[in-house]
Length: 359
Image 1 (cartoon, rainbow, N blue to C red):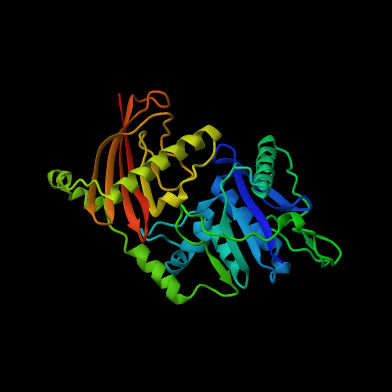
Image 2 (image 1 turned 90 degrees about the horizontal axis):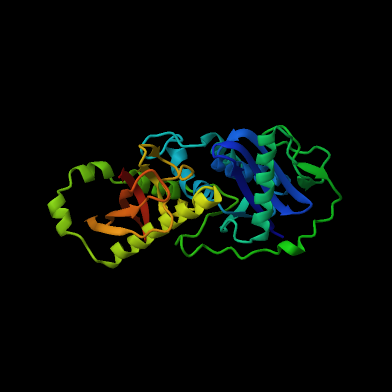
């Protein structure tokens, strides 16, 4: 029988007081946190503690419901390449949150697990329960209180394992299995928008061939800034395309803007990891360098894009330029934006984005 659990994190202020939680049912959940952290740290810690809490039932399949595509991509796609390079990215910069990722990687050995992405705050019962407990833990740390850590995962041995804070992760119970009638095994399917099957590893490590293939794809990334600096504006203007690829990228750009606006209203991280390349870099209008999804670009509500141009720099590289009315949401009258999208297999990923504010 599969263990179906949701894992979630919360950070008030991001960074700020942080909470994490995993949830199976009302009698089987755990939460914790810290005085300072980020949303990504909370999400990763929830997954780590879920693996630790279920170590004594490692033979059971573990299905993890997660609304963080950053976490899913880290665990199922990016870690093999990072490990091979000594926990640095293809651009030689250190991997963010590598301390947690290394611990998760150690817990994966011999485990039968699967991830399913679920949209946060969309009424999914298990995800909402985990989110409520993670947020409650973060709020407790904000107030200087001790959070409710929950009952943990039932443990049938007198010696309970410990989590990363040294606290027990389980309670003693009888040997009969838990009633998980309300959490029947889910059929895990890839999210159609992502276009990829999320990872599944069954009692084996990622093969050297798989790791090498991922590594080659990452190391083969184009030097985008060099390419743009050598670009001839007249030649590229003539190459502006009305192809299906260009229109598809415009739709992805619109999806990105919508995600930023919705996240700002909820005071949460934008749901954009599926749109970003691993080496994404952005320059915000205030000059801030953005290198991960937990730091938002400027959000603009209720406006339309004034398209300036779309240029196919190569068959797998498209640059968009456009203007947004920013008077409602920023100190600028307009934002002039440039985005560079890179084709990865069958998907387009945002590799570079720059905002310029003007009045």
